[in-house]
Length: 159
Image (cartoon, rainbow, N blue to C red; front, top):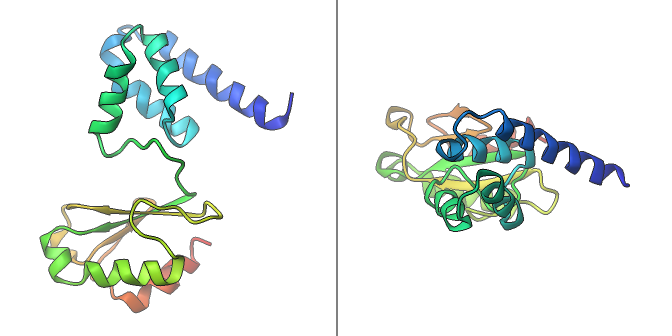
């Protein structure tokens, strides 16, 4: 068995153990999905089917929750996730220029991941930091009142 297969088996085992220790399996679908995404990085269809089977619920219920909440993703994500707020305040103060600069530097549009899997770019409606507009968040760290020329230095610190 390859090293990669052993790592996958360990992740499946950890997820199975997490599910086994839940007192109310059906009522904890979101918690299970969070755990699965934490372990695997994303929620592909085969993983969703496994979760449905382990929780004894329809797979349509699992996929419905995954597709409803924007936190969950069905595609692999990069090591670093960049979120650009495109809410009204951020948009008016230059969010589009930030997205254009990220596209220029990384070759990414929102929803895409770099070929080396280092960065994923997402655009969010509002992050609730309107006073800091425009805002970019990288791995949870907020960069406010951002100008496009600052992006290169920020990205360098994540490479």
